[in-house]
Image 1 (cartoon, helix red, strand yellow):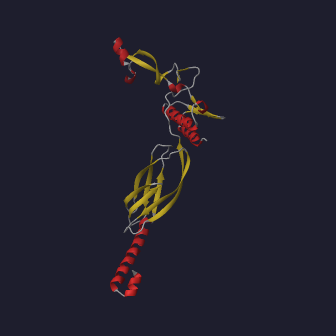
Image 2 (tube, rainbow, N blue to C red):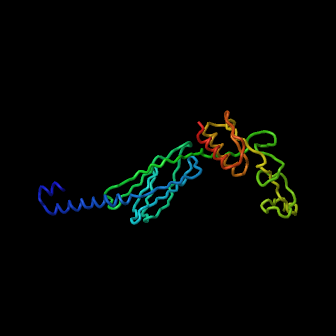
Length: 270
């Protein structure tokens, strides 16, 4: 258009070229200001499992005093989220669902923030270098028998103990005493005898459990998946647990630190 204006000397073409250049100048100025002074905060979940979708919490902060930001597009790997508007000195919080297909250690390299504001002539982007270490635990594959080792005090693959508790198999049925939880009333036995009967449950937390990875059948991925499920179930049931494989041995303990340590060990096991 500029060459045509010079060759023809047509004032109308000069006006068109000037208007186009003005639009480009305005687009460049406001587009750059739109993406300036933006800060990014990424919050990954504490526990991430392979093959399980999880939410990533993202906070976009606009540090500009007077100007808002419009049509900001956040890129997280192959996914994106469009933020329509962020107030001056304000923030916008959203979540993106993502999943890792394999267990192991990962590191997020960078995140992209783009915008087509103001005229959709150009797409401008800013790359934020944020390295976040991520541990992806194995997929927890369900095991039917949680306590699958044989030995003294066990039967049918489960712990057997004389100490009563609130979990596990039924140890005995006795008469109801004031203060017993209603959920432990054995209604069939009560209807049969005409008196309230209460179930006494065995206490699964009375003995620690060692997860022997070498004794679990299957390939390595199957073993770590079963072991992950065991760790989660034992932790949920307040049972002290440990891990044994090869020459490595983790003493039984019930704590969040123990759970994270063993799951991390299973995640990086090769």
